[in-house]
Image (cartoon, rainbow, N blue to C red; front, side, top):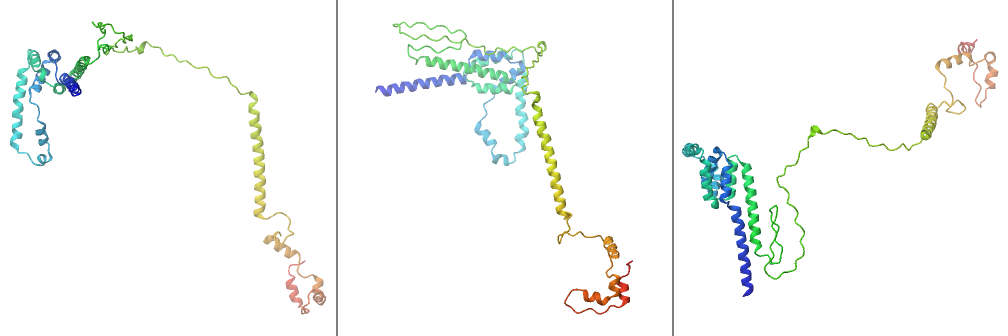
Amino acid sequence: MAAPAAGGALGAALWAAALVLAGALDAMGPHTAVRLAELLTPEECGHFQSLLKAPDPDVEEELARLSEDRLARAEPSGPASGAPGRRRPRREATDSEVSDGCRERLAAWLAAEAPALPWDRVARALRRCGRPDVARELGKNLHQRATLQLRQAGQRYLPPGAPPAPAPAPAPAPARAPAQAPVPVAPLAPAPAPRSRRAPAAEPNWDALELIVERLPQAPYERSPAGWAGPLALGFCAGFVGSLGAGALLILLTLWVTGSDGDGDGDGDAVRLRPGEAQGRREAKPLLTEEQLVQPEAWAWAAPGPGPPSPRCPRGVGTVMGQGSP
């Protein structure tokens, strides 16, 4: 029986903490409402109050209005023509409510309706009337209140000897000693000083600053003055040997391609004569001498070969063949 009772108590405590958090997030107090009304101008005050007094839009009706079936059908022109008539009284009421006492009436109305107004609706109305900065500040304020209420709700479940949670105030008050018997507690570290949340950073005066350019010292030169002699000599040698080898290779390749090596003893190495030189040589060296022409029988028998002697050549033929001789 004790275990179910303890579980039920724990569940009730968690449910109460959740309700406290939800109430802090969904509602704002009268002081916040009055401060909110003071931050608005008369024009924004009337617009903001009209947005808050308007009924909440029905989500189901909005979804039905934006459904594909309804968008596919053409809406009749009757309701469309009456829509400006429904918006006109709101504009007239807004113009009539803009006065010096608008903010006082808004503050009184918000102070009475603040516990029932969700903060998201108030923030949405502030954004629509042109004050998103006030909506952001309202969200920060409500978040801080919710954090404090949750911390206060959790203080009841802490053991008696446990140190209290650090408060967000700038100077936390020291905890009082319990009335019970003194319990040895370990010394606590001093709480860090809270930082200023809205402290603006000091912007430097750029015009008063001076530009200072520092040149770092260069490393000493480690190479010797004679270090260039080796690469220079190597370059000269490589260029000379390379050019000499390339020239010799080019000469050998030229001789091999042309085939004129200067011997003329071989079968294919004989130097071919030009047509002019060949004709001059034929003219300088006749085919038959005068002795052969005078004694053709002796020349015919003296010719080597096993064949029969050739017939006697007439003198007229020899004269024709020897034409051009001296």
